[in-house]
Length: 428
Image 1 (cartoon, rainbow, N blue to C red):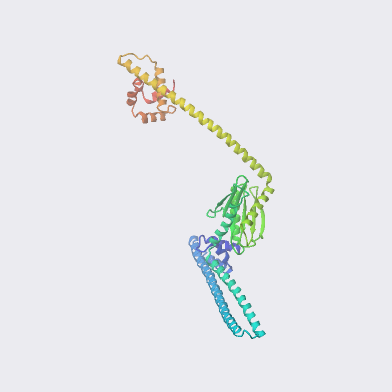
Image 2 (tube, rainbow, N blue to C red):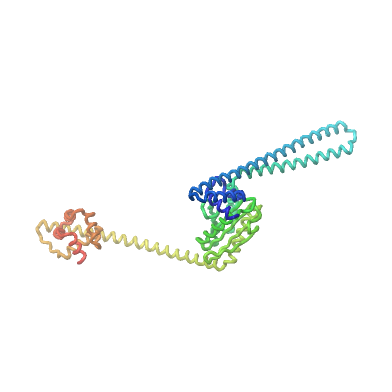
């Protein structure tokens, strides 16, 4: 039957009724109806068939849900009627008792008949008994109302908050980080981590007054297996805080799980009267159990982490030194760049003065090309690839005449094509 119920809960992707409720009400009638629907729609296209089955199943489960609410309402009315009946009987007894007291007071000097005394005691006893029954029924009615009105989500939140607060108040592991993950798929309800104590724990909390359905246990198993694959040194806990047993695990059990040749541990704990102290006791005991079975691995891990921490300190010292060296060299480069810029300016002024007087420039062609190459470098012109050289030249100067206006001493050289100029500056 489990396979059928699994199919039903899978096909009802996001029904209006809570999935935990679906697990609790699925029975053989529902399963048989599901099988009949599959047979009825076997020749229909898959997408249409799935939608039809989904709507039909949602309707049937919704009817079951409404039947349960109706039953609870009827039960509440019956309990209330019983309470009113008890109250009526108490009222009658009180009147009898009142009349008896009046009779007693009027006959102060008359010794009451033994039967009258017994009647008085009987009335007092029955009145006390009925009052106790009424108080008990009031509590039952309140519980029925809470059970009817409280959603599974709220019950789950209460359980998660209990475990969350317990672990947050745990002083034994000072760096313990407790993270709420119930809204993240595949991460359980809580993740608990501590670098110092090598703790990485996935925690699932169930707050149900009956056995946890097998479908929910299977989901928990899928979640912790996926988490173990992605977290080498990790473990898991399932707390059942409102029922004394977990299907197939009893009230307490630790399983050893092997994923990719790495050992992980899973603890199952069930207690109808779970408290923060009990939660912390089980959690600390489980950590001790893990350390006792993985003591060598834990020590090695802590040793490796300590070495990594020391390495990072050394790396940071080297980075700080390099930053200071970089700053010093940048200041020197800036100073030298200014000197070169001033020298170029002096050369330009000297050439201009020589041209005014028609003085022949005695610079060799090699010197001129060297100087031209340096200007290109200073102006961020790529001189290592001809296509980029031509592209950069046009982006920077647009036209050769603009360059000549800025550097007239290169007028003769720039009569050549850019290909020729590139050849000259890369072959000197």
